[in-house]
Length: 142
Image (cartoon, rainbow, N blue to C red; front, top):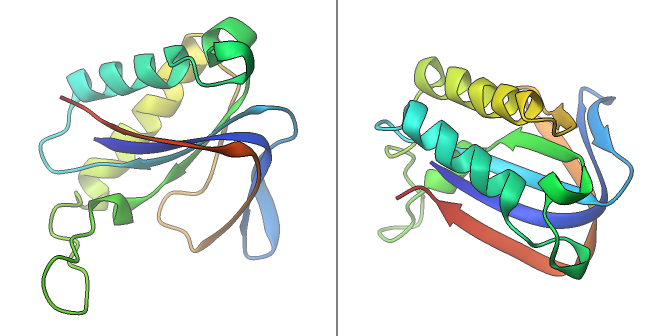
């Protein structure tokens, strides 16, 4: 499982011109990608990292501040462009595997007390954000 975390002042996701998820206070925009071998252990690890990583202002975490998190599914995190001119997506899990794991990460964050907003899995989304500094972190489960 891979995730890109951006520290944001605000962020929103639109589908078909309608806002489906948004945060309007400092928090995290999380792009989440799933590969074929991911399961419950990766969900637990990623959930802990998203909540506890101290990347918000004053080196605090979402768990400490109660900051909201906007989670967007992002299969392209598993794109491979090392050969040729077109990336391949073979390392990205199909929707039948990745959607339940994406939903599990969101549910685990919510169960731990994190305010969560979401995109729409598999939709053509328009994501906008106001970054809180150029602060982006790539996470990958062990």
